[in-house]
Length: 85
Image 1 (tube, one colour):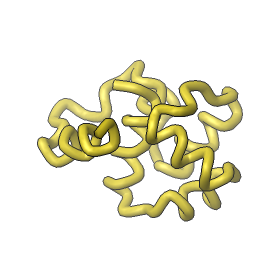
Image 2: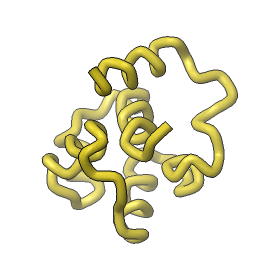
Image 3: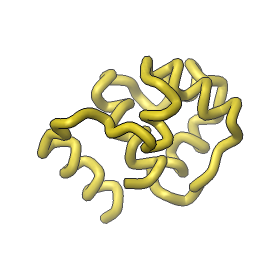
Image 4: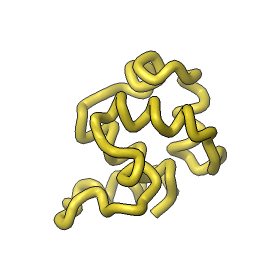
């Protein structure tokens, strides 16, 4: 799973719009959209920390070091597949 896919799943679990996430972490909404679409694959360490704080998870979760959780729902998987389409 890519960085953008994890951010998409976490953002949707928080019921946040891309705009709200962008505002909460100080990134441009277009950056969030491109991340989720897989067009941006890398963020600075500082930006990752801000995204993790906005999504209320550790940086390890955002980076994929630690799984999102042990029971990713089918809804989460379907959301990721839709982004890739």
